[in-house]
Amino acid sequence: MPYGTYDLQPGIQVEKEAFMRGTVGPTSVAAGQLVAIANSGGSPVVVLADANSTGAEAEPSGGAIIAGVTGEIIGIRVAGELDVPDAYWDSVPAATAVGSRVYMSETAGNWTTTMPTTTGVMQIQVGKLTRGGTGACKVQVSLQRGVRKQ
Image (cartoon, rainbow, N blue to C red; front, side):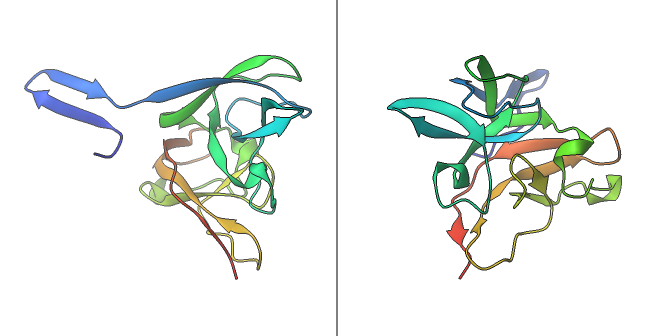
């Protein structure tokens, strides 16, 4: 069953959301950025997801709920709706783009509604746009299996 709100009976709704926590790695993370979990000396750390990476950064885990610097623990939304500030979009989607697929960007930590097409990048759908427009974007995070562009 996909994530979202479901009516079980009249007047009763259930939100499908999932969270995890992680310790920020060598690069600071801002609320709304797309992140991944990598290995740092045998310990898991939160890093910025990046379609150009050939490492763990190319396997997104979700969106940062709060900002954090190296060593801080942050929350990560792995399923459910997330506010994504304009700064973390390759191009801010218009309000008319609601329902569009959202992908991991070739810019570390960013989201995009355009599937990356550069040879060698990871193409991974990470959710659907539930609200567009400057200062108002929201993504229903739903991570999919990706492929490396040949």
